Structures are given as structure tokens and as C-alpha cells.
Image 1 (cartoon, rainbow, N blue to C red):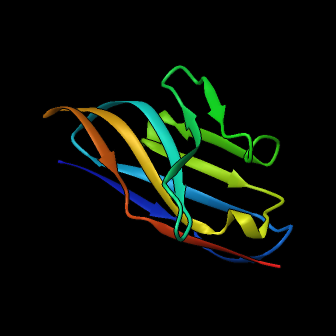
Image 2: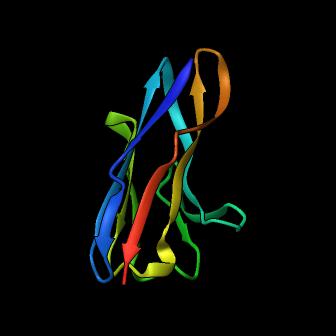
Image 3: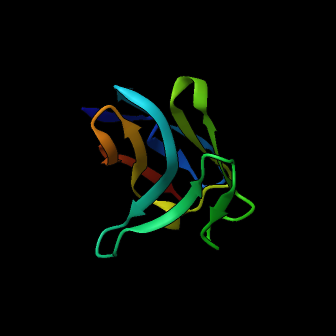
Length: 119
């Protein structure tokens, strides 16, 4: 079984920074894609940033220049560094990973973490 444990959300003022972490736990051989999504009230879940096993990254236009996704393959952990936060970044943030485990490929989601940016 594979579990993604998310931490790092919270309340921050506009212009501030937060760092989210996503640790994959279980019988893991490797992690292919890892991504961060968010869902604001009344809106659909959207991809914020993603990173492949080879290190290729992609970002939503709203995140470019402010957010940085990274991963530590040795620790099976991914990160989302969020700088220059804006009130419109307020949402529940979710980690997603495609994991190669002893059970085969698993598309796993972490629990959401609330990010609230005050103006």
C-alpha cells in the first residue's frame, strides 16, 4: 500500500511564502510523476505544478515565476515552494504521485492541506 503524507499548509499574509511537502510511504520502487493540485471553493481542481522522474517540470500560468516544484528521490518526497503568495492562491492543495510499488503502478493522492492567503 502506498500513502502520501502532506504537510506545510497554513495561513500567510499576501506576499509571504509557504513550503508544502509530500512524503510517499510504503513499498515503493520509484516515483514517476509527482504533482501538486489545488481546489478553491466552487472551483474545479487544477494542476499547479508537476515534475517527472527525469526532473522535467511544468507549471500553471498562475504559478510560473512564484512557485517551484522539486523532489528528493532518495527520500521519496516532493516539495512545492510557494513565494509571493496572493489571496487567489487560497485553496486546498493536494499532492498526487504515480508510484511504482510492489503492488504495481499506483496513482496515489495525499490528503489536502489548506493554504489561506490573507490580503
